[in-house]
Length: 422
Image (cartoon, rainbow, N blue to C red; front, top):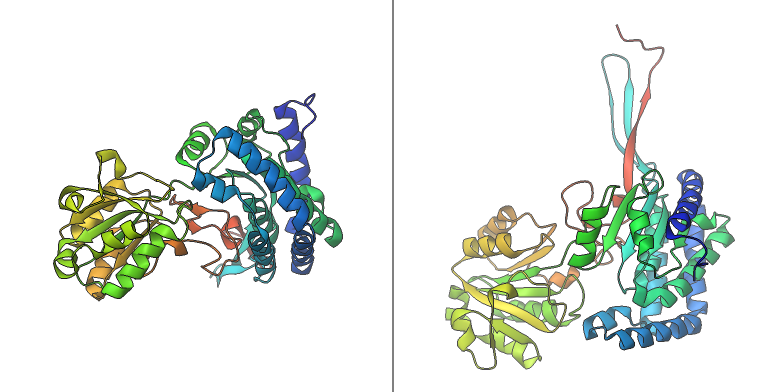
């Protein structure tokens, strides 16, 4: 924990200065050195499994005292399989191509100039997240791979788990000869440290919030540095009249129940009347049989064991075994509903009709649109990125899963041969 004689402002200033110094080093570090640090960190995490589990037990006990919800507790909990997955994620990031130095475009001009647009690190990232201790490793790895230094501020519930994981990341940096200022964790629960990060112009180049609407809203309202917004995951699944029944049943159940507490979990099911006329209430019954509370509107509310939906249930991120459901008349009404109630995260259409699927894709502007696939695939690892910092729902710079490639900017390298402008 932080020495309480140091103010949050001084703490972030000190960490920011260390991060800026490390960023200069990282921008020039060869791929092999960055990958060696990630591989060593993965080894350290596996070796420290018992210590990480003990730290996580402390966090779970603290969360229980605070009455944390089951979904949020699930996000917080680590077990041997999840710890192995963290290590595997680090190795996956290490195995990716280095995004720094990529030539994004190049061309020659009649004035004798040769111009290249080349990927370059952003500089210093500030990542603010809730509960999930694995983000400590994911965000640290992606920042390092993309040549950025990072200051991590995890949730108050996960402070011990995050610290244990961070010790392994720092060990990897030391073994590879990289500065420990490259990956730092804010060592205090004091919320004033978050405010200090949001005001750290000149020290932090971009803030990335990963959490609920309250956290993201606070960051967007208070930040004085740019923000990559990761808003709520109000994800929709639309069962079209031309959907394949077996595919629809598998996808709907997985999209809601695989893990209810993640941002890619489906929160609203839209059913085409044509689908219901063909197949009845099978999708609703599957959800009810799986123990999901279905908050249904209109005719669907007449199905036994459903709960009548309230207006606020549409456009709500439950992060629990609850889903809102309503009937729609075709794809255009589904699109209108999603535009009105969605958060721009992930939507899925279940249909065998190519034209309807194309209409859905063109009519919506969410970061991720899917066809005949579960919204739970909204994940950087599933996209082949190894890991992600979050799903960006804004429209500038980064959209969808934010991996190492999305954590770069670019610069222009211009070469002439004594060229002068007339």
